[in-house]
Image (tube, rainbow, N blue to C red; front, side, top):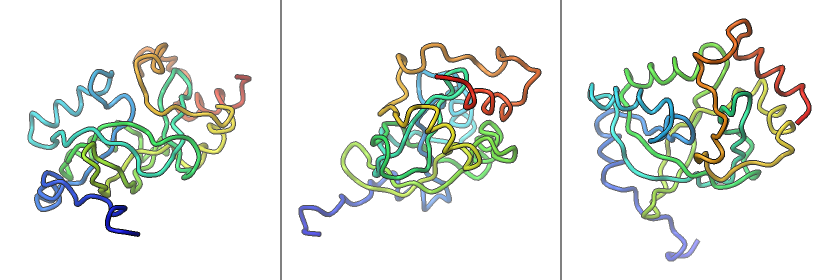
Length: 184
């Protein structure tokens, strides 16, 4: 790789996040500003457990699809899909616990895995993201017709149903199984 092709150095705020023992978290869906779960990040910021770093996009092409109720899922299938646009936050361990709970990590809804992202000014940094659990990710990709979105925008999210307004008789994993087995 020539000097002109080298990724830019990490931005100062990402270096300070690492020095402060924070984890960089890439958000691509309902945790972004303007979406239904962003209130959690606002609460974490108020408590000193999260701070906004900036706009970012995945370094690799990855599929971003919508599942049941227009819930967004990033799929760990590098090379498929798009470079997905999102936001980067620096989060404490306590903040990560709260995000893990929201994302259902212990219930196999999502899994928190490493990701490389590009900041708006071109720096590439390592972070984590919440991907669709590997137990159903391939089925979501097939159900989407192997087509994804470059961004979870208001238009893509149109029709999103908040968790409290979804049918409660089925678990989220059961809702996903019904969704992937239905016709598109």
